[in-house]
Length: 325
Image (cartoon, rainbow, N blue to C red; front, side):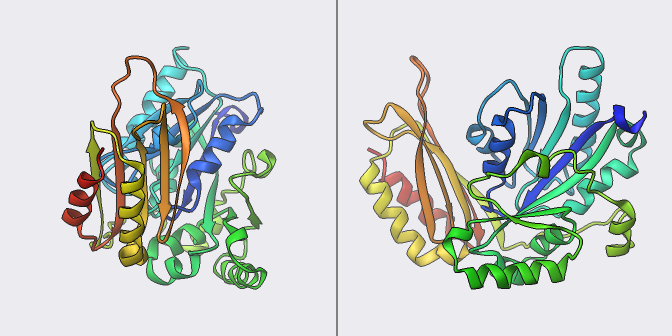
């Protein structure tokens, strides 16, 4: 296909809790008049991000149980192929695709898909890799996790979130570090995903030659290992939570395990609340917002996902059980 007829694809990446879903919601709500197909990948056996994404008439496809850069790469090719067929038959209308990777993904192999699979590469145009970096936790993540470094290295644009939680000097030091790691990607601050759409979409930022300079092995199929100490587990319940008990329990747990709690998030049924509560946290910081109301006759339940290093799963699950009303 001619380049101007190809479907542009944006890969949205960034470490756990950096604010990718917030930015994605911003893109979906913006009045750009385009229909977007969203492909979601989450680390762990169950996804909650599709509940956190603002529902609109977008096409949202979830891929769970695996990292987008290894086991589900075949799934990615299959999903992109299916979207292509459904678009070709007129069953689905979309102008572009956004792939939100799990926070533990190396974006390199995801980008590889567009150059190693001919059918996909001839139909979809890789527009750019956008990387969201959490200003508060970035230094630690970049020190400890190869994936966080890869996300910065492959970025065409770096969007720095949570700059309001650190000093101006901290921001300056982080920008210097990011520019040293990837001099070709502009670094911009974003507040709650507020970023001009023209700086995010149709930027034609992905340059294969630049990437091959960065990583000569880019087009070679590589196997990689995840940090084995990073794992996820899920708590589910059909009973409501007691808000005070839950807050006390989680506050205590993050005092002890905060540094190892990379990300925790969920959609909760709270006693006495007519709306679901959308709950998210990174390390020692957590917060909840009112979600949409429970529909009449809808089966209420809670689901919480924790991702962290060497977390005492049984202790968390037993404690959460005690917080039910």
